[in-house]
Length: 530
Length: 75
Image (cartoon, rainbow over all chains, first blue to last red; front, side):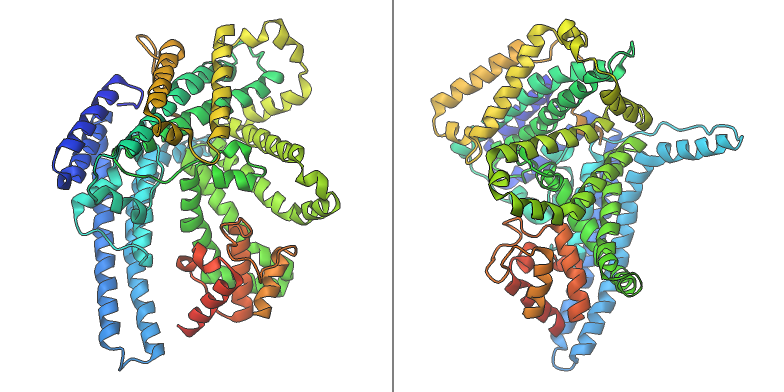
């Protein structure tokens, strides 16, 4: 049941009707039922996987909480008799026991994800190596990849780590935990929520709030506009440019692909998130924001603070920091300071944790070398920028007026946008060598003239499609600009007649220009596959 | 406090860390700075800052960082 299907619209309306008519104490139970119905229609066989992850998360969380409570009670009861050192020792021993439970949970949770997502990739790698040594190719099994497994696994494992760290209390009611894992609006493409933020909202009673409802409706409509008009129109061109049937889409066409794919993924992912967050607002539930106008970022580091925010903070909090501050890493840092000098010793933990985090981020996006190279290239840009920072600072000091100007800011934003777009195009082409060849062709094939000789309409977009796409992108930019201080939908929600007009305009635009209807293969959201 | 300010100064020489009160919110310290800072603190003050203590409130200002160091030293 895709967000863009008629069945989803019907399902959403029914859920909302029941949500606000049933007694409020049943609201969360209704959401749990709706989430499982939603997931059942996505694929009945997927239910087993989500049930397994929920059971593991519940049991491990519960066991850790039991130990943590017993530990606190013991320390409290023996505060007078135990010395500070004994208390510390006892807590350290208890933490180790909790860690074993956490490790079991993580192995089981991530284990399922690893098996379904990466088995084929690993086996193909082994098979290729074997073939190089003359062995027969291995038979690669086609494994089922449950919808949204990367998202709900990360959310559940984040919860387990929070319980281990005692920053969240384990949920006692297994059904409530099941709702946290499976909450359907965010199940398939995030955002990846934290238990402390989401749970209180899921389980509290929500009255109908006209203002929030109207604002939510505006956001949902805006999300559909982004997806059905901008993303799905751009997708037609991206598909043709990537397939490159006659082999002529090199040079300037690669630059076009980079621009069009940026429009597609922005419309697709932020559109999907708008529908998710907007629909949650209709239910009175506020989800974490996942984007903060990322294409106006002036550096790669800033871009990653503003794009797919909840994934970024997940990796920072649960991978990057723990890796950097482990005792062994700090010992290694001390050792390398003594042996290799302060400059190297200081950098080693940061470098090691950054490379590992980006390798895993790449792998999270998909089982393929293109995703791994994508992650490592992002990492390279970030680390090189970090090393060049003193040079930038010196430049800023020498040219303060230039670097404070709007033109300089615009240049930095354009540079970041193009660089991120270039790296992102690794998602598109079928493998890494092809991508590199295509990048090189931008320097060798000077075919810009072709664009004006019918080239712009040679990859599936007619003149009217171009007008729709460019008009849509312009509207997105305008919406982003106007909503800098306060989202436009909130301003509209205070003026119901204007909101109604805006919704009608968006609906007409989608009906006239959107990609849908009989024979149209409703494209899935890109992040559904992750 | 002087030692800590010295470490912070090495990260961003142009920032007056004695006055700044929202180092994370204002985007002065990012995740790479935090890890470098923790490594320096571990070496200088001989305390170990665990991952669960890496939250914005503990790194919002030089005072907050010093309070964290003192608390961890106490524990």
